[in-house]
Length: 467
Image (cartoon, rainbow, N blue to C red):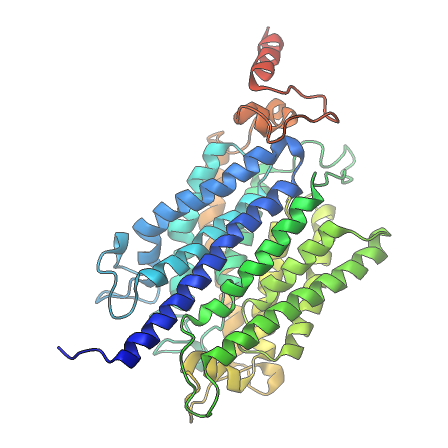
């Protein structure tokens, strides 16, 4: 056996520290999701939504450990382009390709997907249903998409030996793999459950049901922004990789640029939403601006490493209008998503995939996927002169994700609905999930609401009604 040089040991250590730090940042996004969700629902359901965020994390941890990582990255002797077949329960990890830090980073992504879907079905879903769909989504549905795009043996992967359209789909940190998957799953859950009681009147007109705490929404938004610096730049996996075609650039410059494009896209989207909603509703709306900001982050997540900063501003501008337009359409169709997760993660995630196919820069694509090697030829953004190969792969990724999630999560939610374990009874929904399912409210009192304060009070009322 050859002794490892100290230079390689130091390089590996620095790269591992960087990946672990990025994993911790992505995990902080769970706290961001929890705060955003809690602030975006009514006070009587705050305990429920916070508990579902905890459940998404703990259930997702077990399912991703047992099955998810294997389906996503299991590329042993029986590897295929569709699904991984090895590394179940981390058997044979670490190895020459993957180690524990890589698993932890990917796990942080997996539990984020279930959090997206939870927001779509908030305020009206039985707690047991969360356990079922969270396990299935993070343990099977999401990892299969990861294998297609992020595993070197995946059929959509830009690192595959057999590139789709000579390109593969560029989804660097997951506008499609993470956000579109979560958004489409949420769409089916919300559609099958139907709107919350009282969300639309007898004539189909929307009735406002605003979140109860703007402070928590803003806190959650900034925590998510913070976590996105692990989500997008962290997806380089390694920071200490020099580009041979230059004397002073490496993944460290790509990481910095990715953080900048992420910031600019989100900020532009937030600004456009601020003024766009001001024109539409006549006042400055903090909650809408927060969602617009997050929509910009979702959209840039696909192309964050391969576009110029000016292009990130274009991405954010259009993502804001995608979100505003889809929210208007949702109300017209009587579609009720309390967190706007379907519109935000699904709509802006889809736009992000298309945007990458239009604006990816040749030099940055080769840096991100070939470590800056000289003489490499790859398709890049259509508007940048790179031909149709990349945009074609992006459209294929968009379509197959929508199809895959629809044929897996749609029937699951429908089965839960038919078994009467998806939606809570109307009287429990009106009383609030906190009091009917969790023993009491998240807060001490709600003087503005004439609801029972304790679970025992709620049960006495139920007994009285049954008699």
